[in-house]
Image (cartoon, rainbow over all chains, first blue to last red; front, side):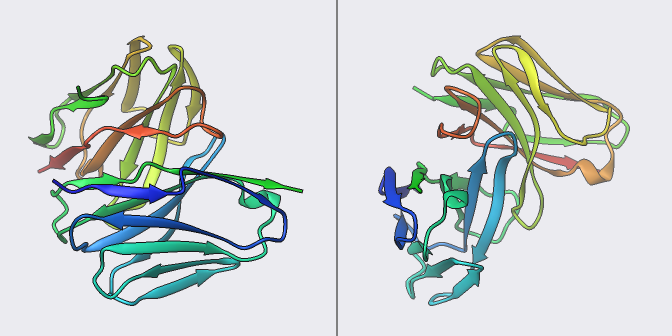
Length: 113
Length: 114
């Protein structure tokens, strides 16, 4: 069965530091999705990656998908307190809308001012 | 043991029908959620209950009504189903209201309205 593992489980960084969160799959993925959990808003969609080697950036957050489409990283540059929250990766392994969708275990990020 | 379970896994129904999706968690969590995932895999929160009390109620048609008989269950009832309701619906739970707590997701219910 498909599994998504995230690491680290929790992360505490000083404001201004860079950090990376990883999401690893046991199978080749069709799509990899990153979400952020904010209080009172549930999950917020950040980015989607579908092509091997793809990289996307939004403001100070960059997500990459490796060539084999089994591992993704989320990199935050010059972290700010507003980046704090729980980051979750999600994935599917076929383009069919009826297939299983998987979630990672989550990474809790604390940014100390 | 399944942490968060949803039934049914698949639901195919005609427009205009009323249907329910059930969610149960055995993690002892106080907070439960319903999300709708669209075709682009965006996850949009619909409702959140903390200890059987509604705490998040996003702009969702009145046809959708959540019910929490106890804190281990959060069911979603949909009246007068429309074509646009077709989506995957995910239930989730967390120990406390979202913010510092990881949410654990159910396997999803794939709803297709014909």
